[in-house]
Length: 532
Image (cartoon, rainbow, N blue to C red; front, side):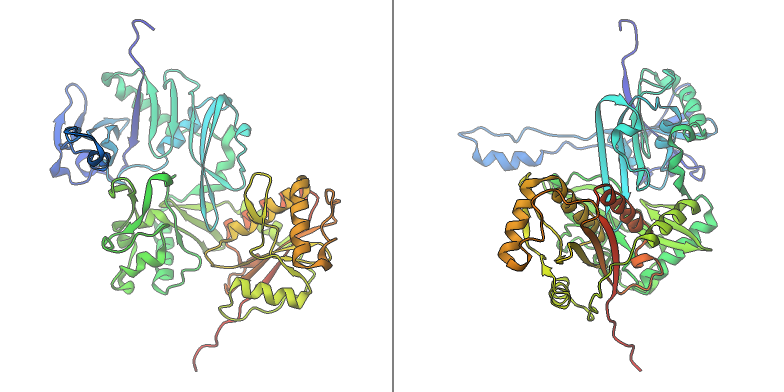
């Protein structure tokens, strides 16, 4: 509108109270240029940049005709930080590549999300970013063409942790649109002189509890703010790593990744090693000379770096600590380390999930024992012979969308679909539950899939040809069972970590809605007796 200031997108960070001034919030402050801000309590920091040719110049130039060349083309990634004092705290505004000047430990990691949840119009949400925790960490982004309420995003509030929310604030004075994760991205007309007043308003929203009315379920996972408790939990994590109890620990990027531009991952002091397609705790530890000396400071000092396939330069780099996913218990309470933050799982939520998992019936078949270090395919062959079942392991069946999936690992004449997974293998339990749900849905809803299954089964063994019906399975006529081979001593259903139990509950509820009976079975994998 004529006469109005233009809308601009500002990226805003709230610095931690422990950060003593702007120069302590950045990396390598001596290499930056610093400028005082007239009439405001603030400074601007910039880093000089040198224009360089983009990677595609070298890629294309040899194929151009005659004397044509692209060598004159250059890119420069300029950035600046404006750090203001307001509401008794420091706020950092990042421009261009300025966010890369900030030390990742300098700012509050939930500032943007809390501000948005306390100010957003909950019926006009445009985008949701979430994390689903299990042995794999699933990052999901959901966009709507029109603003709507949370229910339109299909979020599973029992499994998903909000990472970012986008929508218009209820009060236009806050901004035109807000998106919040660690930073707050705010579309606003505010000019530099108005930013301190804006910071006052944002800080008040950060400390509010308006979110409880529409987003109260996020308190199922509460951030741990007790420094002494965090220290004890960190000590437990380090002890597990030092004693190489790694089955319950894995690494995951703490944010969504541009996988189409990703070459792989590397680690501090691993620059000459081949890249990992996924970050791995075992690969990181290979570069730690003395594991007995490893501590939390080392986990925070070392980096997991994502390398670009286009430039072979870093796309992102995070503390190893921020990439660790781990569950710990203290005083009968459950805690989870995710994206560098410890969360306490509410006791009522934890009890509800565990009670549900304990209520799932046991598979009424005597599964054979699992030999030490047995492979999944070997176990499936042995189990098929012992049970008189048909092994469907690795027998891929085309779906109506053209994908190929397994119906199950073992099919019995009593119409039991057994899905078998070895605990701690590279094929995670996330895949186990997903496979069980997807194949059951296709069997119930897709005639073409049932036809393909019947054909595959008949080719494998004529005696099983009539097990799979032509029509939709009758309710309770089929049973889906999840079988876990495990060496873990964890005293939980199927020895699963908490977030895997949450995933199990979600799978069971979906299968029951489809009309299947569901059961589980734990098979202990043999372990060598200790020497002496």
